[in-house]
Amino acid sequence: MLPSPAGSGLGGRGGSVPSAADSGLLAAPVAEAFDIAPDARPLLQDAPVRVGGCFTRPLPLDRTCSSAARSFFREAVAGLGLPGDLVHDGITMASELAANTLHAQGNVEYSGNKQRAVSGIPEFWLYLRGRGARTEVVCKIFDSEPGWSVDALEQPGKAPLEQVGGRGLQVVAALSAGQWGGHPSRGRLGAWKVAGKAVWFALRVPPAAETARYGRRELSAEQAEDELEVMLTERGLGSRLLRADEPGGQISVLSVSRHLTVWRYGKTLSWRAHEGAYQRMQVYDLVDVGEQIVCAHEEAVLVDPAVV
Image 1 (cartoon, rainbow, N blue to C red):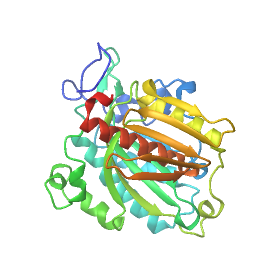
Image 2 (image 1 turned 60 degrees about the vertical axis):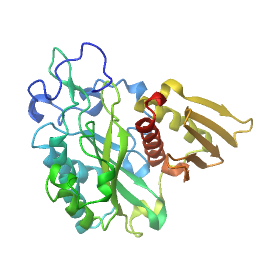
Image 3 (image 1 turned 135 degrees about the vertical axis):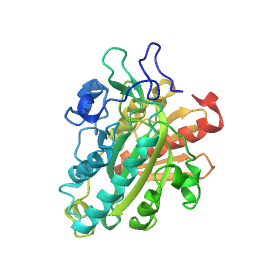
């Protein structure tokens, strides 16, 4: 069950699911669709993908989810200079992953009066990671119902393939040349941020593309630390965040939970993943840094629910 406020309306299994047209999600801006206060969003929330933002949209709760994902992918990568065949592959993979969300709507919740989804709705995310010739487009589809094991994504011949849309994940594995996977995560939209899973694929941006040649918006180390704190708070991890900055600004420490601490030295961010290995990333990959830290937190929660 979702950790939701008392008095929430019908759940995804308990009542009728509104169509995309009824919900108005495709027509409404993200903030309006979920009543998100402007000052509650991360600073990069509305920034274009090419300068470091994360393109985020709610997916419809009906069979138009695949066509919506195709439209979202085209919109999100516009201006990135991707070849047509690469865009076609990305559209196909986004469509396949979005189709699987039809099997994962049991935790969608609605307002009592409007019959409007307020939390747990599937989401489309797209952002850049890497730099220069190693720049990648990362596309993720989030849903709030685990339902099938994230670990089983590493075994594409197992039952989850049949449970979530037949050969869809095999198509993604082939078109992405193995650059795909899944992990625990939290939603970016909604009245409260729920736990769930994100399934993703990545596509390399051609080195000649303007996005790869000119990079993204430069953040100072202090700006990046501030932005990361806002990002994690917006994802529902703000209640236990503790931060300490060394005089001079070269080093700072951000405690997320008793299992997870993020260190910044200059423009390098590091933390210990659930399996014990340290991860290190640069501040220009801040969206992916935030996502990896959320994943590390959710992995720790699966082992020890007291982390919450």
